[in-house]
Structure formats: C-alpha cells, structure tokens
Length: 204
Image: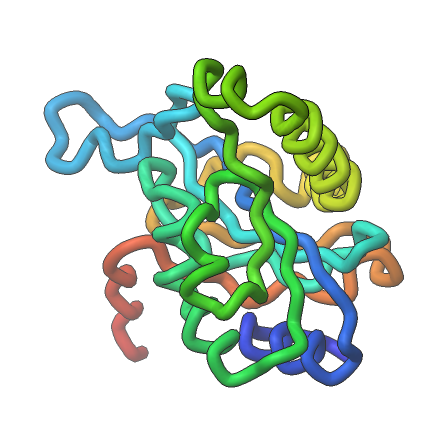
C-alpha cells in the first residue's frame, strides 16, 4: 500500500488506530542572488541558512509515512501544518494521535487533542510556589521526548541516504528523492511547489 498524500496518511492512521510521529526538517537550497526580491523568504530562523522545510510523518517505529508539503524555510512549523491541511483532515477523524514537538503548540486544541505536544514549561518562580510540580512536568516532557524520538531517527535515515540532502535545483520546486530501501520508506509523495509554478515548456 502506498500513501501518496497527507489525506491518505490520516485515513490510514484512522483505520489502523495507530499513533504517528510528526516533525519538520530543513533542506538546504542555493542562496538567491543579491538584491533580488524576496531574498529573505528562504532564510530559516533556526539554522540561519537558505532552506526549504519538509513535513515528515512516521509511525512509532520510525518508518516513513509521508514526506512533503514543502514550504520556504522562514515558515513556522505550525503554519506549514495548517497550509498542508492537517487540521482539516483531522477534524474528520476521532481516533488519530500524532506526537509532535513544541513547535506545534496550539494544534491540540484545534484538533480535539489528536495532536499531542509536550507539556509547557512554567516560570521558575511559579514552580517554586508549587513544590513537586517541576519534577512532574520534567518527567512528562522526558516521557514525551522518548516516545517521539523515532521521527528524528527516520529523518536522519533519509538524510544519511541523501534523500533529503542539499537541493541544487530550483528553489521553487523541491523533489525529495526516494531512499534506497522501499521497506523502510513506503512512499515519498510527489514534488510540492514552493511558490508559483514554473511556466510549461512550449508545445512542439
């Protein structure tokens, strides 16, 4: 079975009633020329490099389910999830659980708790007034990190095999190449345009 789109992944997770892991990863691209309009749109606020961001979803074992919905590197993780239609698809399901990092805070309330984010950190002075709360929250964050670490392994596997290595082509079109192990990577979805599509070649 090949999961071609994000909607296919959500439908599959709703059918098998299995949790999933989600994160975003950056792919370096060529730096735009100087004084070009929109030069800073591809600069990532995290790595300070020119990049595009791909949305990655794996199962609890780190096996790839979806890689795509690429956006410019300056786009926030939660904005990318919204643009990909994740919230709309999850609103049509009830039994899907997706573990994410703190970059997706707020999606849990928008998806009726189906997107699970780590516990927020409280101010140090507030924790001093509540003995034992700091240790409890730290244990909750550690448990959440241990459950979602497999998605980091899946992303590292793709980058080790150069599937998500530096992209030397057009920045507006990013094509994740398939990894050499189909058993590990059941699908890499079709290329996603970042911005306006290039003009079609003239008909011969």
